[in-house]
Image (cartoon, rainbow, N blue to C red; front, side):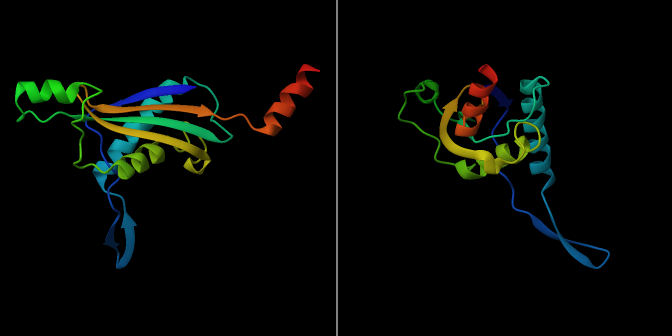
Amino acid sequence: MISFTVPGQPQGKGRAKIVKIGGFSRMATPAKTVAYEGLVAHAAQHAMNGRPLLEGPVSVLMVIRCQIPASWSQKKQREAGDLESFIRPTTKPDIDNVVKAIFDGCNGVLWRDDVQVVDLRVRKRYDFNPGVYVEAIEIPTQAASTQRELQGA
């Protein structure tokens, strides 16, 4: 299992914009998205600690922890910070866009490509320490089990 936390307010993947360079149009990812994906890659690389990329199917647990608004009363802030609270963040960033940004940042660092993710559980909550917690587990396959049995025989 590999786990890591991307610190700071979670960010969704921004939409690519069309830019013209030398008379040609091309798609460009917003600089803010590129920077956030770099932060994700750095956190994932640190967690990998030199281990090889996950090669098989992967199961991911992700907890998106959003900043509690400072404009709220102290009481409401305390209530929102309780993990069992019914006060949930129904504001931006969208949960699916955060997942896209995290997954794209993990490509080539944690796994070869995010197509390997076959199971995903995501939660979005308020927290006093914003960030995104990611836990990735490579799921054993029948081929891997057979290979281990052959090596042990």
